[in-house]
Length: 161
Image (cartoon, rainbow, N blue to C red):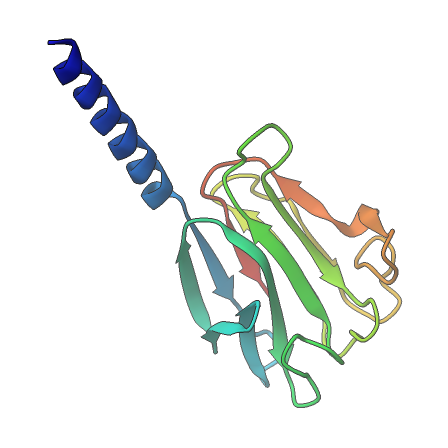
């Protein structure tokens, strides 16, 4: 009887962990207000999305970048205004999603970029509308933390515009 309860408990824990991981999802929605260029979403060496519309990621989206490729942009957004984001359900208090705009070289201003969270933390976001938006609108040096925005809500999504 004890062995059966142990097996049941083990299987219940595995199933709960598996379902919890599967349930996490985050959507990145692209709104191109410039009328030119192609929105890109990159994670590591992979293009996750190219073009308009939305991309839904199942599980945490860690260390991703998004930018509007207007011609001069390189693969990781170099030469362009770039959004950096991690979207994840917080594993502990204060360790959830974080997003910012970066102009730290080799990134530089090419178009206005803004973002806002949805599905939680609604209204939280930031915008860089010119090359002089630092430090409140974007990182121009590694310690411009006032441009970063966090969200501690499960399954939060983001709109890039």
